Amino acid sequence: MDALFDPEKIIVTDGRNFSLSDYQTDYTGSLKKKKDGLKILEANRRKLHDLQRMMYANDSHAVLLIFQAMDAAGKDSTIRKVFANNFPQASSVSSFKAPSKKELDHDYLWRSAKVLPERGTFGIFNRSYYEEVLVTRVHPEYIIGQRIPGVDDVSKIDNQFWNKRLSAISDHESHLAENGTVILKFFLNVSKEEQKRRFLRRIELQEKNWKFNIGDLKERARWDDYMAAYQAAIEKTSTSYAPWHIIPADNKWFMQTAVSEIVVNALESLNLSYPTVSESDQADLKKGLEMLKTE
Image 1 (tube, rainbow, N blue to C red):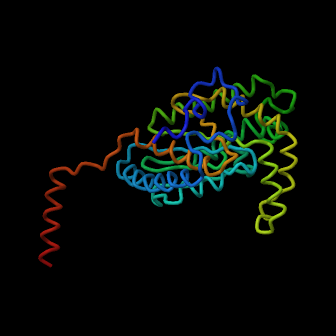
Image 2 (image 1 turned 90 degrees about the horizontal axis):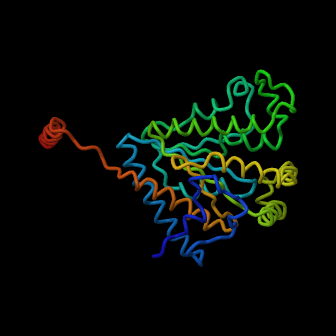
Image 3 (image 1 turned 45 degrees about the vertical axis):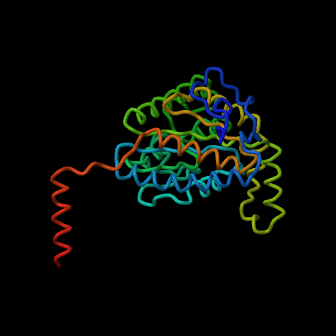
């Protein structure tokens, strides 16, 4: 079949000419029917399980998947649907909400650094250290609570502050990549209109009431500020070693299928294989087989 999507409409490996407004929220690539997307998603789930087993046995790479989005874009459902067949020993999901007092007593990268995936495993971040250049940029008063020396007033949090923080994040990702971590970052790009529809469903459908938080509407009122923060973050941290993927999120089925395709392609590009058994180990295998047969 044709390629699932045009890479230029989704993948950002160089942010110098990036403009978030150029990316469609309702793009569905070569797929026109939901059922076709779901078939690909199911096939990719099976592939992911097999590739994860091989990666676990190979023990040479780690994979870090970062999901960022506005509320109701579909982070939870995408993680749940794409990784439904995850190989349990080789995967973990970490969610990052408001930092605890202990986390505030460390630098802003500490709480994510301590749960980074080890070699042979997947680490899925539902939100991440990027909250520190997104939510805090929209609400710079949160920075004061971090007690950074010399930053004791919002007036001291300027563009230079944010550029330093973005450079530090990019350096952090460069270090991880150099040491064997494959980094894939996903911004689930939902439209403001679709977000409204999803919020309304949370209010109107009783089984979805638990998802609704009135605070989400306060953040929705800052939509343009958030888009500006995402623009700056993606522009400054899109690299060949840690690319951003701007995933159209108005159609959840395409969003989930596209994410699964990107992860499968990234793992397949590693040319993984199961470890080769040494001659001495082969001798032990034969010996073990004989011992079991003669029990």
